[in-house]
Length: 139
Image (cartoon, rainbow, N blue to C red; front, side, top):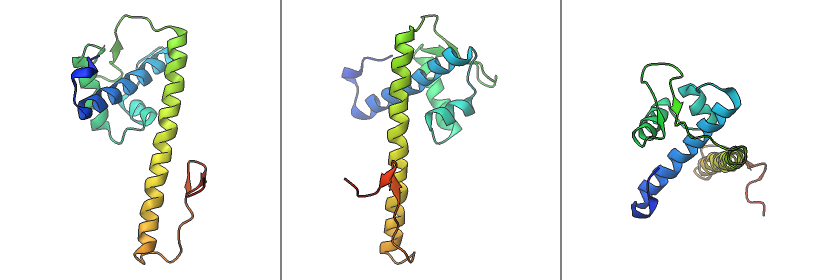
């Protein structure tokens, strides 16, 4: 995509995020042999809104990573470069890790919100939230 050494931290994060979305799209194509919908991309990458998906798709198209026709359903087309089976396996593993940590982060945010409400007296019982499959605060 872009040479990341010349980018700011915020720009590098955006490139990394777009690369994760692109990786998910590549996996979808390999598994289904057709283009994902914007909603499938949103759900598969845990993006918060369709407008963010649209923005990332536009960025990827501007970078030449894919093409897309706005207003046409399932109109994403990848570059002709083939992706090897090993690369697909690596992409799948990386995305699973990304989704795992994203879910843990969301669980932690929810738990901290509940804990704050308890501390302020807005709820009667102290929360016992689970974070990533274990009790919050467990080591």
